[in-house]
Image (cartoon, rainbow, N blue to C red; front, side):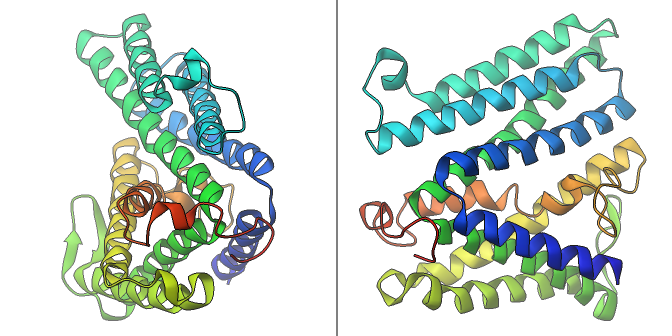
Length: 294
């Protein structure tokens, strides 16, 4: 019961944030959520290896990613005047900052050489895992809030139905060494739910003008990315020898436990939108209004 109540509350709150917050406030809120998730990730890394100043460095890198995402949005909308900093590809700059910081974190450690290399790798992975989600969420919200809501719903539905479908019908394990309770039946149930929610949410949120044959495939891909993210989080927690990332959300664990299914699906959705899966990018820009379903 606690799990259900927490799920309903977080779903309602997430929907309100996506649909009704103006872009500048949305950036602040989603950055705060990502920083809390980064604190949980840092705590897990600390259980795996010695990682001094890891959390602070990760926070600084993610704040820079948030800043870069806002600059990118402003240049797309031509809100700010073009300067050398703005003309420079902000995604490339953000990736460079992450790489340099990862190297610095590894070199500054006083552990063995292998642990230093592992620490740099875990920093780069965490910064990209959380940072790409942050960047993609901001960009999708800028373009059309319903795009972000769609992928969140698709990934969440897949996560929920994979859990309950696996408990009801699961026999064959999906990845026993990573997460023994996940089953093939659960994965199929999750993908079916992702497809159903993706198609059900398409018409009322976008209308017939954005319905393309590629959309069902997009729902399946985002659903599969959501389940992959869940497995990644399970692998990380298994390496850290903990059940949950934290106890922040009753019945669910921490923010990482709640966000794991959307942190890979959201960047994938951003790519799918850019290649025209949901119609021309020119149609998606400015197609809706913040504060209401577009």
